[in-house]
Amino acid sequence: MKQSVNQNRENALTLKIDVDTYIGMKRGVPRLLSTMSRFGVKATFFLSMGPDASGRAIFQLIKNRVFLKKMIRTNAGRLYGIRTALYGTLLPSPMVALAFPELVDRILSEGHEVEFHAWDHRRWQDDLLTRSTAWIEEWFQKGIGAYTKLAGKQPSSFGAPGWLIDDRALEIAGRYGFTYLSCTRAQEPFIHETSGLMEIPSDLPCLEEMGVDTFVPTILNILKDGGTHVLPVHAEAEGGIWNEHFTQLLTEILDTDYSIVPLSTIKNTLRPELLPVRRHRLELLPGRSAVCAV
Image 1 (tube, rainbow, N blue to C red):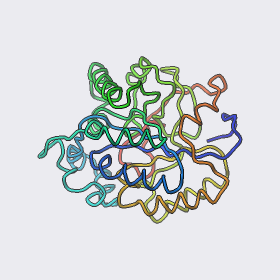
Image 2: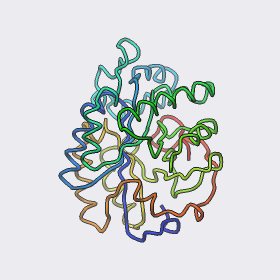
Image 3: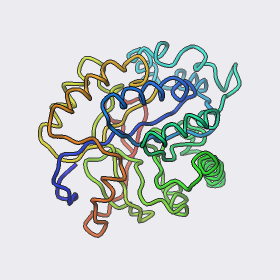
Image 4: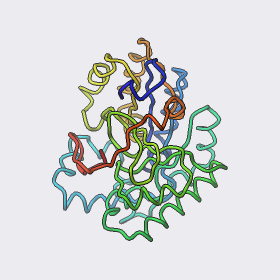
């Protein structure tokens, strides 16, 4: 992210941790918490609240050959497990964060931030652009209600599943009093033209897009230029079979002059009146299987 939009001249990195699935919440989050505790760093978790319907991805395997290639490339069987591949089809959909209230309490008690990611992550990612406005409104109502039940407060931010949004979603998000969004992939913060809300995007690529062999050197090479950056992390990946690579990255970063801070710290350094007003567009980024907002 360009320093021109940030009043804080220090080099800073945020770990934006998305929790998309039941297995990511059950196994990935505790592992990430233990890893970050070792390094003394804090992150911002974006939690899926409701049903894990990951098994519906089978329809994407049929329709989208790029998605199939991604599943093979990322070793999805080991990444998510067999049961996850059946949730919402042959197996009932378990709740994600709602099934683990004590774990949500642990995240907060250890000094991390918890924000709103999804009600039903898979259906949003697959169906948002063809669903009705009423469906989007109900999705937000269920998700925000569940978040409030778990966290005891309203969320400060929304991070859209798969970085997928449209004008209707932005307009509805604008009704919930979010102080910022983190719904896009972009190089610097901006103001959404549709909603007037501040956007703090993920500017760095995520591990699944790069592959394990190039992940650490690629991120370190980008960070050499300094600035403020947001790294997207997934509980299922960096908290699962690729935790060793995540640990290596943290070790390397903390040997530099970077500080690792929650997203609210970056938000508090920004002056909205100095940010550009922009409209998102949808684009297929390298390493991804579906379009996201850029």
